[in-house]
Image (cartoon, rainbow, N blue to C red; front, side, top):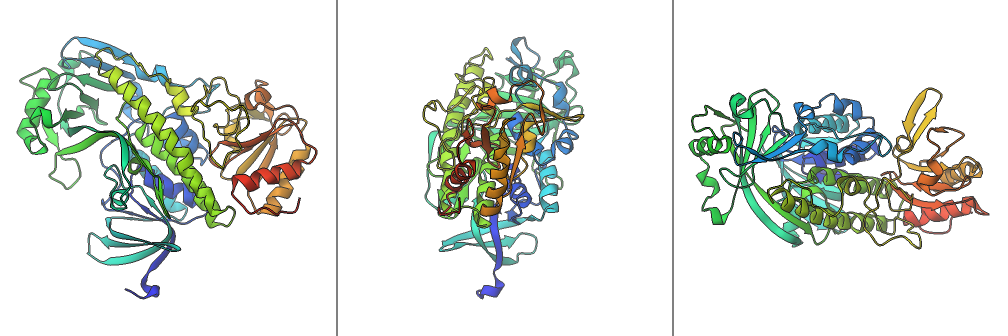
Amino acid sequence: MNAQSDIQQTKVLIVGGGITGLSTALFLARAGIRPTLVERHSSTALQPQARAFNPRSMEIYRALGLEPAIRDRTSILADFPEMIGADTLAGQERFRVDILSQVRPPATLSPTDWTMIDQDELERVVRADAENHGADIWFGTELISVDPAAGGVTALVRDLAGGAERHIHAEYLVAADGNRAGIRTKLGIEAAGPGELITAASFVFDADLTVPLRERRFLLGYFDQPTTGTALVPGREFGRWALGIPFGPESGRSAADFTEERCIELTRRAIGDPGLELTLVPLMTGSDQKVATTRIGAWVADEYRAGRIFFVGDAAHVFPPTGSFGANTGIADAGNLAWKLAAVLKGQAGESLLDSYADERRPVALVTLDQAMQRLQGRHSGTGDDTATIDDLTMILGYRYRSAAIETEAGTPDEPVEDPRHPSGRPGLRAPHVWLRQDTTTLSTLDLVDGGFTLLIGEAGADWRTAAEKAAGTMDLDLRAYRIGADFDDVDDIFGAAYGLGSTGASLIRPDGFVAWRATDLPANPEHELQLALTRVLARETGYAP
């Protein structure tokens, strides 16, 4: 096993098979890099976990053609749009809020929308597509150790079914190992923030709640019994529910106190029916475990990278559940990192491009943490009012990147976000959505970003197409150019305003859908300017032939 021939080689090793790890595997596989993923659990999630995926996540999956498959698995929660608050389910409501109406983007803002799909269902879709495109995914395999070394990372893993151990050498390792962040912790990288807020006991039960429901339907119920912050959500099957009960040292409870009998008693208190008949359901098929404990915390890692090891998802940041930021932020982490790893591994970018992952994603996590905490405080204030200083759609679609992989313009505001309802098209922001038409087909500008770089050109900027073709050949890049107004009709005649371009201008969009650079009008030498921008964005050596 010590011989080099006994060590399995892979370009990227991903540790953790939750939605962030699986999405990283998917994005790499689609980019032509075959990763290896190890996950200690025997399968993808068996319980819903996250249940709402925001428009930005759906835009990312839509770019891969996965939106129909995901929407085919929409959960019953799509019909339950409201959040309620009360002392108990049977008690008088303190507030009722239609969550989806507050956060749903208009068709002018995004080509897609929120999707109510249970995380376990989404993981199955993502895993299947990742494997179909070459990802090597091993469930039931635990990480034993990681040895960072020059030129890569060597990991020792164990097959939990048979006990066999093997070494894997990867050029890069992506730690998607959850909020306990085992790899990051072992490397001595700490996290900052409010810390652990509370621990919650959660379990699934079957019960007929017809009477206390009083013909109401809801996405999420917050109750004060048996303790403030108790949360009730409907399951996939009629009559199945999940209950989360927070507890901490001050409550005098520990995880051991949540016996099956105790959980039944606490559920009756939450519902407000001391005689309720209910049955707890095992959390996993073939398991007797019926109660799980989850740490609800709030922190962001001090570093997102340690040499050739990168931290994504909950391994990099943990937010309270308010706002549905957790899994969605992890998916965006994966999308940001994967294209950069692929570009470096293909020799299309300099290694320092990878520094931009932390430069871009960590500030977003810090803002997200602040906003999640504001939402948490507002939700627990007893009114249900959203007191956050940044609205949901701006948080989801309007965050700004600053890094060496963005050609930030002079005069760019210092604010970490921009209202996407009034786009500027500046570099560092998500490319604005504009409806286009070609013959009888209607599509979005975002649909033109399909894994490589994309140059969107004004109607009179034909010279940019020649510049793009030469840049693609000279720099060995996947770079496609489209003239809006010529190749596609601008349905609402807003492309120039949305992207901040004149009729001869051009906007360079990165593979992750963010504007990297733009020229508002045609320069004297568009080929030179485009290649210079690509060289800087990709951290490449200069010296190309202009």
